Image (cartoon, rainbow, N blue to C red; front, side, top):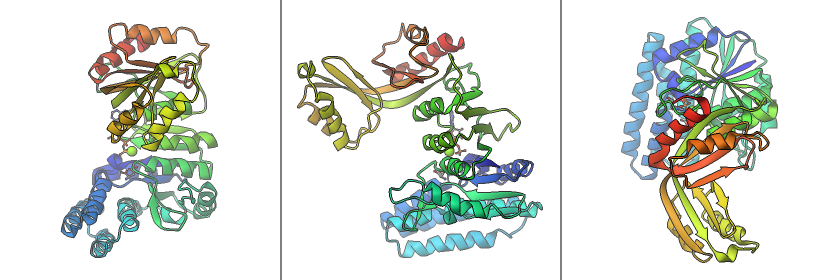
Length: 434
Ligand code: ADP
Ligand code: ASP
Ligand code: MG
């Protein structure tokens, strides 16, 4: 069985829903289709909850009307009549009822789950109208978190498998939404539909997990910055994980782990060009190749210099504990005998962190930096890759270099204003493109 996930951009209008419907109905072997909410809808639902927290039910109702109109119009265009209107009005009415008695996070989660419930029902109705036997599997019946808030794979397996025993041309389910260990409605965090697809793929031991978006697969650099980029046809899960964390937004980072562990290939495909091969991600590493470059903006570098670090032990622990106490993750780290530099992207507690670090040494901060990450087979015994990367940087100031943390990456920290020059120089040197 294939799992086919379509994000909000792929089902953002009646026309888009129709082309996805055609695509899935032409897919052989009874695929399981995972859908996000229509584009922008989860944001609007977040807005609804925001109004309710701020005790502004009128604001919430106005946004709910916009969500209703968007779905009513889409349903009319899609189905040609008012057949879909009943269920849309019911869902909106249930949320309007919540605006009168809003009590907090439990109801917020219920509100956030409605976008996927709306989009999946619309798709089911349309497919059935086309004479396709599409069966909707309610995610709230099988997608569960355990007491630690992690997906409960044994539960998911045992509850999903029987549902797929039914005879059908294809199955549909909602991405993103789930229940927690107490059975309350919950979700897999923003962008979580990719995660749903991956978990379902692992639970059903699927043949392939397909993530369909509206862009042309992975590129070896950011096409918005580098003029000539090439498609990346293959990545290992480890390479994809590095890229997902460092700004290539095509695949949600959490999605990689379940597929990797279950050894199920993930394919990134383009709804605009369904016959293109896309990007295949699996457990194979191609030896001796650099695959892609990605960049992450809004990075802050912090340097702590201290002669107390020289030959001392426990210094780094003290430094890290400060970041931990402010729940601030560190992305990159470089050390020398008398200093350590780290980067963060969450600067909410920057002044507190700097204040606490001053107990241990002289602290300096560089704002508006950018991590550029080169991904590929960077096994330390491969010769020449570090040289290729660093010679590309000969005219660009580099604040930090990190190599050897994994076998798949070299990261550079540069000024944000040098990002474009860095990506272009790396493309020239690594891929002979500029
Ligand atoms: P969805 O989940 O709605 O299908 P994605 O989360 O994959 O879409 O991406 C959201 C939007 O971000 C897409 O419309 C796409 O145009 C854009 N996008 C994603 N990744 C990249 C990238 N690496 N470079 C440029 N644009 C991207
Ligand atoms: N609809 C959810 C969101 O916008 C989940 C997803 O699209 O992946 O975050
Ligand atoms: Mg997405």
